[in-house]
Length: 390
Image (spheres, helix red, strand yellow):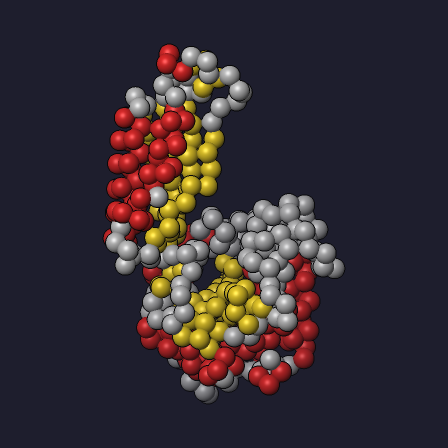
C-alpha cells in the first residue's frame, strides 16, 4: 500500500488513528450514539465546519460551502452491534456486550479525516455535506434521516457511501454499476395448534408438525417458485416454542429473513411464503399468522455515480486497485434509503492485511487501521473530482 499512500497531512492521519480507537473503545448501539455524535460534532466544529444535529435522532451533518457549484453528500455510519468483543486489542470495547464488529468506527474516522483535509484546503467551488448516520444495524437510521428531511435541508446532487470489506485485500476497492447489497425482508410465522399431553398427541393439534413442514417448504421458494436466474435466499433463523418435555405447546413462532435484489422477486417471495405457511398449517388442523416486513431495500448504484466513484478510486489506488463488476452481497445496508432518494454509489474498501480479517459481525473483528488513509483519500479524491477548482 505504501506506493499509493495519499497526500494527507500527518496530523490528519494521526487524528484518524486516535478517533478510530477511541470510538472502538466506546461503542454505542442504534440511536444511542450520543458520545459518538458529540465527538463528531466537536471535531467538525473545530475544523470550522457548520454542524447540524438531530436528524435521525442522533445523526450529525457537517457542511462546507465555498461559492456556487455542485453539492454532494458523503455518508458514514456510526453505530455498533450487540456483540461481546473477544479480541485482545488494547483499544477493546469498554462496554459489555457492545462492540464495533462492523467497522463503523473506521468509517466515521475516515470521513472525519477527509473533512479535516477538505476544510483546510478549500480550493473547490460547491458544497460538501458530511453525513454521519446513526442506526445502520437493523434499525434504519438512514430511512429516519431521509424521512426527517435530510435532503430537503441539505440538498445534494448525489450521495456516496463506503464500507470496509473483509475478503478483499486491504486498500483495494470494489464496486458495481447496479446492485451492491440485497434487500432485507423479515418474517414471523405464528403457528397455532392446540396444546396437549406429549403422551396423548391425538387429543391436540401439534404445531411442531406444521412448523417442520413449513421450514422445509420455505426452501422451495428459491429452488422451485422463483426463477433460477433470480438471486434469493430464504433463511429461518429462530424457532420458539414449548417449555417442558411432556407438554405439546399451543403455538410455535418461526422467524427468518428473505434477501433478494429485485422488487418483483420480493413480491413473489412474500406471496409464496404467506400461502405456504397457511396451507401447510391448515393441512394439519393448525393455523398460521404471518407478519412480513420489508425492512431495507436493495442497495443499487446509479450508473453515472458509480463511474464517478470508480474514477476517484482509481485516482487513489491506481487502476489495478479497483475491481469493477464484482458479485454483490446478500447482506443488506440502509444506505439504500438514501440511494432511493438520490442518485449515488456505494463502494467497498478491502480490509484483509497480511492476515485475513475476521468476518464482519464476528466477536474477533477489528477494523484494519492500514485502510484509514486510503479511505479518507478516496473521499478527498471524490470531492476533488466532482467539485470544480476555485
